[in-house]
Length: 329
Image (cartoon, one colour):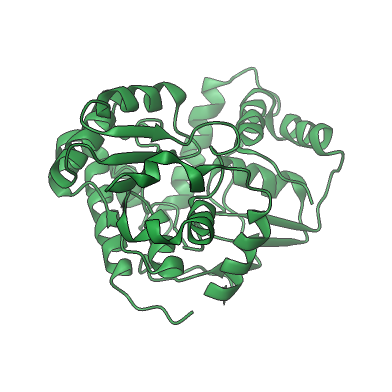
């Protein structure tokens, strides 16, 4: 089994822009020691890094595991709403846009050999998902639905690797404790860093009293500078801790909840959750806890860049709809 981290994927993307598909393929071969894999597991088939891997590693079987704990998310679901993103839904237009993008990139990189190639997404052989109800668009490949039991068993297998001391953290003795699960809004250029920090602050001020203990679980692509500035912004009104050391930063939040359930189950009764992504679903489905989800329409309109507001509002509405659903898993 070979795991490629997000940092390595970013390096592969950079190599692709510099040296094309051949350069990316050589880099993958140098890093892994292989030129071909039997199975390739990816969240989606439209992310650039994933498309490069699918074309370079020539897998016999391509498997999608979806977003979060198993959501199918189409390519344009969270995309910025532009003229191109609207018209490319018309039959035949999407292929023309791919060709036009290739022409533009060729002139942008005239010395590149071979010329820049824009890859169309390849289809998966099968997808393993928890639900397909996030959007009306369904995957064109076969689907297997994953059970809650299997997901919990999988997390428990990794629990033995977790060395976090969160279960004994003195902050859990506070009268009110909330987890703030941030996401990479500013890193994805959907708002400025300043706006993201202010959005979290205004959001918490409306929902949580002063003195509340706030434990921040960062998104894997959150920047360290943003997290420190957020901590400074919230400190004074709240007691703030960031789970950002090496042993905690990339750990799925679900493992922390399993750890708390085993080591300090009583504290779950006083914990609240503030989420801004599909991470909210595992809290509800796997642990029967009820998180807050989304900044809300007013804060989205206030702090998001204009092109991303509509998609963001729709996503928050979809997540709330899914949270209200019943899952027999």
